[in-house]
Image (tube, rainbow, N blue to C red; front, side):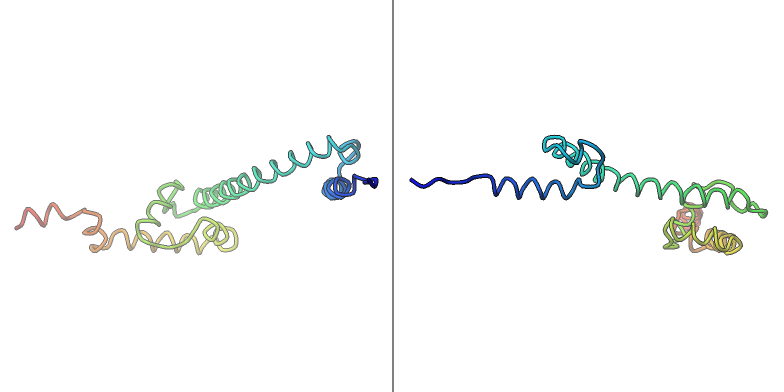
Length: 141
């Protein structure tokens, strides 16, 4: 039987893993077992931090909106939760990212949005929809 030289496939696999960890420091880019461990750790961290990044940006947008609302001189809204709740009820389809950009770039535009929400909230159609005057109408009939 002829002699079979082994190791080419394993070497290809190891060099592929080494390319992934080539920028790591010390044994994390030199030793095969440590390279495997660090690759797994890096991929787990990347997966976890993608969700964390979304969470962090959402909290950043909320704090920006809250800061602008608190600074508002008209004091239309002083609480973030009331603002978002009434925006949802008046069916303004603006997400937190867009509202935060509006708040930073044009703060007076955010107060105009808040006033528009109040107009919609006080209109008789929305009071009927929300059940504000339904009892009165039922009593009349």
